[in-house]
Length: 227
Image (cartoon, rainbow, N blue to C red; front, side, top):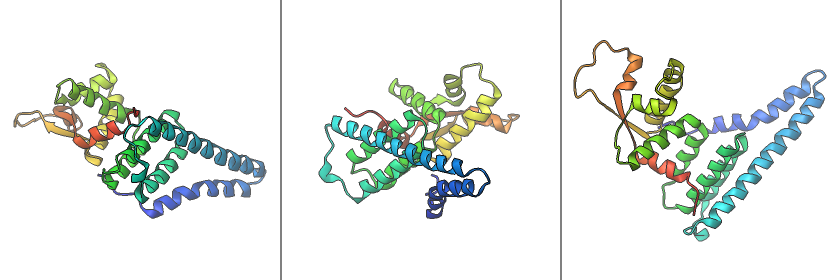
């Protein structure tokens, strides 16, 4: 799993806005730009937080198992962390996922805090391709397909005629992150113990079977709308 974000990293991220404003203010003829940046930066973050909080309220109002009396310091920290991440996210669909994830983390207070916080970091780092691969594996599992060969997984995501850029520039790094960094996907060799000689190392990833790990399944479930 990835290492927890350090306090110094958080401080650097929170200081980026002021640094940009200071740099613009000290640049000749850019004083007006600095003022515009300050107004835009504050306004966009406020609007993103406001819309995320509204969606969070809507999700919780639909939940049949939400119990406000179970909220504690952990849930408040998760709220703060989730809203900070949503404020930096320019994609509306991703912010909606953060709202659903926050709602899940407030409903499932019995889930260990570290796992819930891990899901925040995962959603923050994941792009559309990571979520697509997880959904493909989940759908396959629900249909009774326990293992999906990696080359078939790639074909389902990018098509059977996917080029090398899609295979090695997008699919392989995404699968590695899901499996090696987060443990959301497990990979098993499909060689039946036979030595695979003469295979390019870059191609080894296409000679494994993939399955959705329990942690990955819980992550995907945490992003579902509440009813």
